[in-house]
Length: 258
Image (cartoon, rainbow, N blue to C red; front, side, top):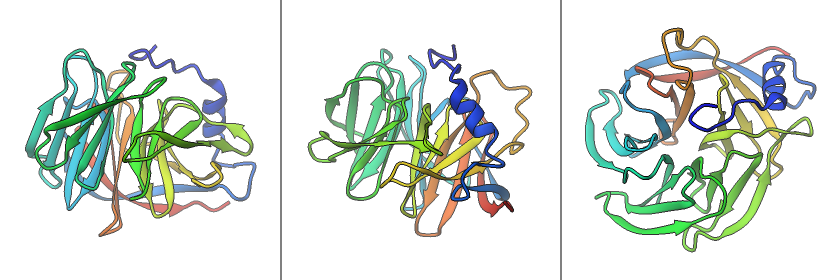
């Protein structure tokens, strides 16, 4: 049990680990090259990550340690930071318009902040757990630890529909940090070194990014896994990091031959 997130979900592990030779020809596997490396706070138990207007925004978890921050991308310097109330385990964030939406893990409550001042504007409730958020400039997308991604109306925060995520017809759950990238949803899978690329219309996984070896984790704690995807749509740059990792990596995807 990792902070309560049970890692015994053998189906997802098997599916992802054998993905170097996926059953479906439609699933493309990618490696990576590292373009740049930037500093990342080793105290940050990363839950949400995004880039807006060239700045990095990050939410962190753990009760009594959860925060939301705005940072300089290249230096990691904290420009603005708020502490989440200690009774909450902070989870994913997204910015829609001038509002920052944030989830909590098991409290069934989320918060809406002014994205500039970080002043809390309101709260909202949901069933189940809250894991991650992203948006496509029309709707919000929320993961909850299952194989479903909820689509939410950003004004009412009511659920519109759900995207059921599968790989070759089989469910893939433990979808964690989310990022909207060029019409697809990228998602970390909790505890694994892979990011899945999801078709938001069908829910099918159309690509798997294998980040094995991007950092030496032998000195890390068991919870200090890959988690955090940020995409700068203006420059088309992709960034990844992990919980308590000392580095934020700018990467470029490399297709593997089938």
